[in-house]
Amino acid sequence: MATDIDALATVADYQFGSGAGAALFAGDLTIQRTSSGRPQQILAGDDRVVSYGIDGRFTLGVAGGHRLQNALAPPSFRVVVGDDSEPFVRDGRNVFAKFVKTVDPAVRPGDEVLVEHADGELLAVGRAELSAEAMVDFDTGMAVKVRNGVPE
Image 1 (cartoon, rainbow, N blue to C red):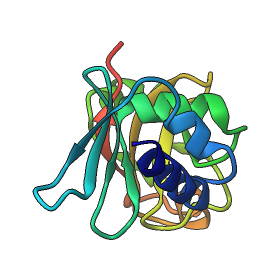
Image 2: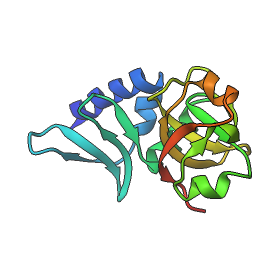
Image 3: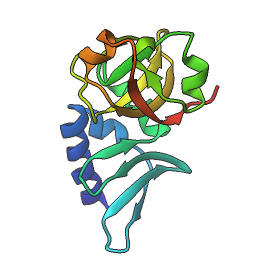
């Protein structure tokens, strides 16, 4: 199993930056596999850290979002929203461009992102639908497709 974790950590470092693999895959983890033996879900207890897609990229679970948030310095992979959209995002609703306060300038469409409140609290994890520049420039359109909200 150690070689699987090492290989997955390397992919995470490539996708999210140096240190992400160590943060995501620390501690006691369970790897759920497909029928062919390929890693599919990585769990910490009952919490999903990440899913490993057939495209070779990770999708974040809330547990993985917390781990990345602690490991990566802001603004890495973060989309920040204010009070007006917090309850909706926590509930798993999508983030719209007009509510984005700040965003990591390196975010591209399709990137996995952390949705944070302006005070730094993790609200959700999801996939960016717009580039960082478009998120702050547009007044309409979906900025982040929220996968999982973080309940209070």
